[in-house]
Amino acid sequence: MKRLDRYLVLEALPPLVFGLLIYSSLAVISTVLPRLKWIVGTPLKDLTIWLLLQMPQALVQTFPIALVLAILLSFGRLATNNELKAIQSGGVSLFRSARVYIILAVFLAASSLYINEYILPKTNPLVGSLYWKLTSGGGSGLGRLANQDIPIGNMTLNFKKVDRKTDIIYDVRIENWRKKKLYVTFAERAEFVNNEIKIYNYQINIINLDSLNKKENNAEEQLLALVKEHKLDQSEDGAVVDIDENIDELITRHSNGGFEDSRSIRKAYNDANNELLKPKDRTQAAILFHKKLAEPLANIALLLLAIPLSLLYASNRGLAFGLSLIVTLVWYLIFTLGQLFAQANTIPIWLGVWFANILLATIGIYLFKFNKKLN
Image (cartoon, rainbow, N blue to C red; front, top):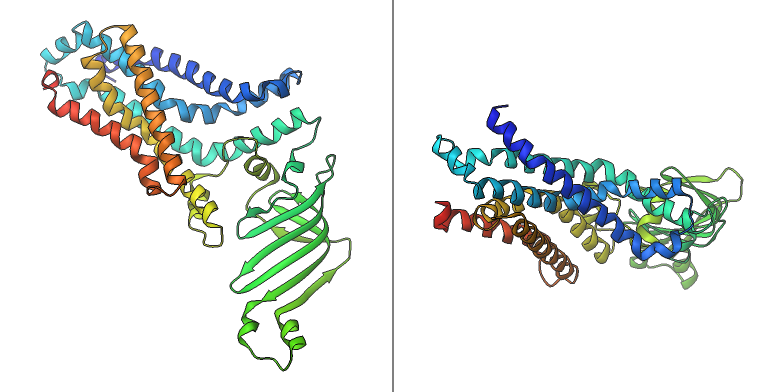
């Protein structure tokens, strides 16, 4: 690393670390405040673990805005003190001077993609399940899923009640479509084991819609062909049903606790293209897929805007802080509204999620190309 690069890195890192600490802490606090009255009195150790589990999600959300703050403070100071002019007079281009920030933005984007794909699918489910354990006296929160039709892959799960101590569920119904056949499984009870559900004392009924195209001799034969008891098992061995999620993921996604979705990028993509899911569920998965890509790449989009702003307007620390807040609020507002419009099918999903990045990056490129002070 050349001396200039080391100098620029040392200039950028303190405000970046400061921004990450401040913004990520605020992101975690914003999730805690609405739940404050329920978590007061919980053991300090468990509460600390719960807060730390939220940090990966907070970092993904705050990497772009911390980067904006770092660029406006550091690059803006260099421009204000005429250090950039001195560097350029030595034959070093503006693009070469900004290379450190470009590498940093790419690194943060790659880190966010990695966190979204591999870390959040592990930490986010624990955030939801641990919260219900802390606030319900040891229960996992599974009871909040009772009497709901819960989509699990190409199946739907429903149960009436749950034993809070053992997490065994009762009066279970599992529905599964296979082409034109609906398999409906009724079980006395079931339990979650890793990514499986073990059902006991169950009966499987098959509704064969293909039979409606066949002419039987009488109504009774037609009914028997339409609805068939496939299997009845009253043994204590039970049977295993494979599912795509474990109990913590189900609780986090469907407990109506307002927690972040735990699906990875690939899982969200697969769900978005799963024709067996309801249109609403596919839309939510598609929005999540694009969001998990757009948030990391916002590091690069906001970089394109932050550099010209730092050169043109960040003449002191106060203005730099103010500009970073404005850029952050504008990006977040457009990003959120875009998702809402996409959810309502008002605009295409990709446009709703990516519009904030596209708009701010375009403004930044425009400033680079057409502002006389930068040319």
